[in-house]
Amino acid sequence: MNNSGNHIYVIFGASGDLTKRKLVPALYDLFVQDLFPQKFALLGVSRSHFTDEEFREAMKSAILAYKEIDDTTHIEAFIKTVHYHSIQFDDTSTYATLKQRLNTLRTEEKIGGNTVFYLSTPPNLYGIIPQHLAAVGLNNQSDGWKRLIIEKPFGYDLESALILKDKLLKDWNEEQLFRIDHYLGKETVQNLLVTRFSNGIFEPLWNRNYIHHVEITSAESIGVEKRGGYYDSSGALRDMVQNHLLQVAAITAMESPSSLEPAAIRNEILKVFQSIRALKIEDVKTNAIRGQYLESTIKGEHVAGYRNEAGVNPASITETYAALKFYIDNWRWGGVPFYIRTGKRFPTRVTEVVIHFKPTPHFLFSGGSANSACNQLVIRIQPDEGILLKFGMKTPGAGFEVQPVNMDFHYSDLTHQRIPSAYERLIYDSMKGDATLFARTEEVIEAWKFLSPVIESWKNDKEVPLYGYPAGTWGPENSDELIEEKDMTWRYPCKNLSDDGIYCEL
Ligand code: BG6
Image (cartoon, rainbow, N blue to C red; front, side):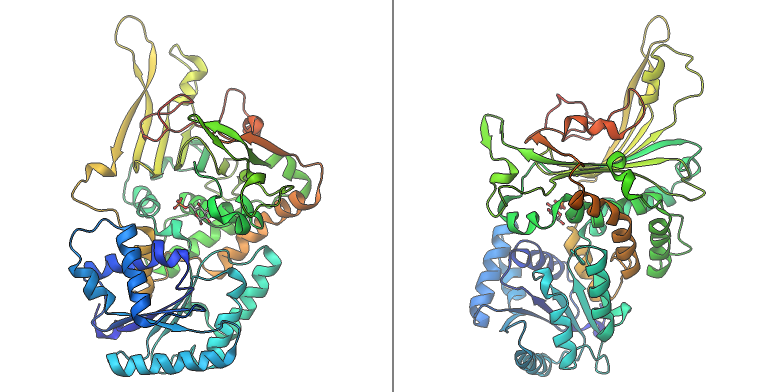
């Protein structure tokens, strides 16, 4: 980065978990790769009282805890860029002290006015902090750019998202806002674009003429862990579908952008959101399924049910499993169902996009409808990142038996290349001002619009069942009901990309 990229990176919520687990380790990785601008300072901001030295020690321990490091030379150099300032988030007068601190740092480090403000705080502060920053002029770009990074959730529903949007846009302009969806920072999600638009073989087939349906899964084996309090007011729909899964679906479905400019890519993503067929409230029952994990025994260990997790209401009706079926009403996708599901306490952690191709028009060979299962393109986001093509081959010997076989590529085969973390990529982009991989206001609003009937129905319609599923299983037993066609089920992916089935290694 050249001199014009010099800046101060301010993290609000600096004493929080995300800062320790993700943000500072990612910043450290960028530092090691020499991707910092010539002049740079990191300023941690939160309510707690720390001296610069104490905060540096805490960040050093975080880096050592979350990264495997033999040589600490880089840490010592990195940690010198770190500073700390304590404020009360809802007290305007303390923002004047923050401004003063920034001015001092700018003068001492000869940095100039460029500043990133990263809000890694509880969401109820997303309206408050930017407003206070603006009140003391810290949104003013006359002395250098100012960028605001906001973690999800962006609102709680359509109404609150619209209110937050108006609040932010009162003092900040859209170009200054960077909404993090860490899935967009995943190398394998970006590779979806490359797979689709740099290969002549996939794109001609990527439409309603050849694709039967698209299935997107994001499964987690963990439960809500220590985040019960947050999760219970959120649920799978808000936590994973509104943002991560709909973004992945949009990248799977979008048209080729005219260039790699952020606006070009984001315009195409937005068009997908605008083309998703609106659900009527009465259709929610048949197009969405919710579930909640129950206590169970996994590999000999007792696992608590969701309602018994710390911070969760014992009578909670919050879903830990959500599955949806929807259509994208445009020329490319007319009539092709998209199925998405996500859940906690699944048998394994896996995120993938599966393109199911249409079966051959005439089953020449034995296997009948089994042939329809043959052609799948699996784009594995995590783990065992890679791509798998499943197709039918002749079983050697007499006759024409067909068996499904795999052709696969694993990122791990590129042994010399490290896959950067999503936060590393997104933080770097925010430093450069590249908004391609950040969600734009309209996208977020469209996603909330689409989910509104589901949110409303799940909240108010007592007749919509909340199914229980034992922890360690693939969700409610009747989740296949969403997939209309006979003999079709969700895929049961395994830890290894090349395997699937209920009984594989997890
Ligand atoms: C977060 C959700 O956005 O994504 C978490 O709040 C979830 O509940 C996490 O566990 C999953 O991210 P990843 O990168 O582990 O798939």
